Each structure stands twice: as structure tokens, then as C-alpha cells.
Image (cartoon, rainbow over all chains, first blue to last red; front, side, top):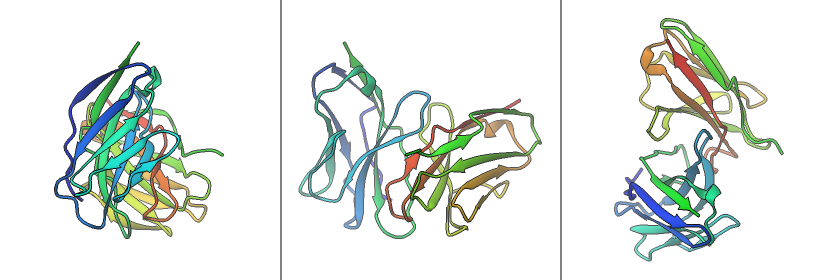
Length: 111
Length: 112
């Protein structure tokens, strides 16, 4: 699976949009971009995934660049409960494939 | 709809002992994966079970073994425990091998 690069930490004010970047310049054509987050003392929580089109669900939006070398996870109105480590992972969608976690981005949402 | 459940939540063992951790997947899921998360690190893949067989394995010694039952639940066994095995052990389930994985809250294993 391709390697990803994320900032170590980011800050966001409560109520504002949080935009978390991820670089995956070596992504292959059959690899999807997945986002998970891990709140302290809990297991990772699946957020969203996509191949090349932008995706949106009740939690977040995923914007993938046209060349697929980078993506941005957007939390439209961050709350204090969104404080967590966010992991960007690329993974082959089919066949035997697992999740390879990096160090992720620690997002701190402040009042 | 119950999510992934793991038991026990915490466990303390001594070096050399053996431990068994248990996982019940989310309803409708048939694939179970296990991960080890050391303090301050991201989770590391141990192995994955589908149709009661180990399908993939990460870079872990054979002291780590597992099992999947017909009801899709799973166990992780670790023999000859070392101090370095102290970690949070996470179970994740998915609908088929390629589906998004959903995690439980883990078992915190401490080795004395």
C-alpha cells in the first residue's frame, strides 16, 4: 500500500471548518483513500473513503485532487468532540488488503 | 445494532504467560482483523480471518495465533508473553474482505 504524509498536528476553532490534508503521491490506480479517526481511549472510527470523486457523508467530506496525489478531509463545523488523531490511509479495495496506519494528525478543537 | 465488541477491556499478565482475547464482529460482518497499538503509535496489523481461515498476516511472530468461529467471532492468542507485548489490541470487522473495517474499543493488555 502507498505511503501517506500528514501534518503532525493542527488546531481548529469550534464551529469552524477543519481541513485535514494528506499527501499520497505514490498512490496506485486501484487504491482508495480511507480516513479514520481515533478519540482518546477508543478504537479507530471509520469516517469516509473514496477513489477519485469527491465524497460526502454525515460526518465529513473528502476532496481528492484530480491527479489523486493528495486529498483533504473536511469537517464542516468542528466541535470539541472532534478532537482526535486522524489517519489517512490508502488501500487496495479488492482482494486481501489491510489498513496500514501512520502516525496521523492530532486535531485539537478549541472553544 | 451492536458494533464490534471486545473482551476483556483490561488484562494484566506476567511474562511467560498466555492470553486469549475475544472479539464479536458487527452484525452482518464476516471478516475479522486484529491490530496491536503500542502507546503513541498507530495500530499495526497482526492478521485477518475470513471463512474461518487466516488470510493475511503482518510481521508478528508465531507466538501470535488466532481463530475464527462459524458465527464469525474471533480469538487472538498470545503465548510466552513478553514485556513488549503490552499494548492495546484492537479487533476490526468488515463485510467481506474489502469492506471498510469497523473497530472495537480494544483490550488493554499489560505485562508485568
